[in-house]
Image: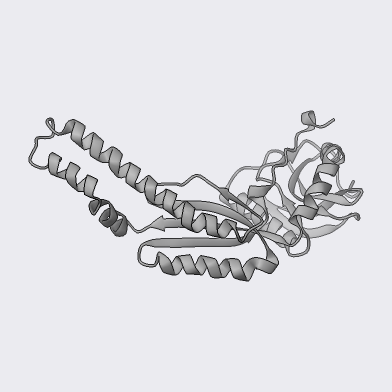
Length: 256
């Protein structure tokens, strides 16, 4: 435990690293106050933390501080990232949890060495999507049934048209999954599909890739970008810590 810190204060945890010595990582501003970032060590594993006054407000500034701190540590270590908001009542509590999940951390590190997470979102252009929908023969036939009818007379036809249009968009999502997601999964160590947001998002995925394979992965993303050019926007982000590929629960009552 960090002998220079008061154990009466709450402790906010950013991530876990492989480190056997107490160490300081500079400062971070959380909840408007400058706080020292340091390592809580047990054997060869440490949790990177700072002391706080209590629960940390989920503000944009605090979330950015959380991400930037983990990114800074990631430049020096393989990290197991924690989600935003993990606060313990004291450093003793944080140390207690670390001792009980040490083996879980130690098992994860070899799986994450030399690997990074990247994210890819594919969002269809509105005009392209509307054009694709309008060219579908079944949708064209349904629209002809609706045309010329009163709103009341065409009520069920309009519902049917809306349902089929939604099914058509789902088919485009399935196509993107089969084409883009499957080909990128083949170049990654692990992959995860996340929920799409909005009507035009075709793909929302995260990939865990080996750094040695990053160039090949980037090249494949570029191939699909060119294929969908003029049809969809690609948002390719990273490198990130492996947020989507670790599931650590930091709870005292679950340890023991």
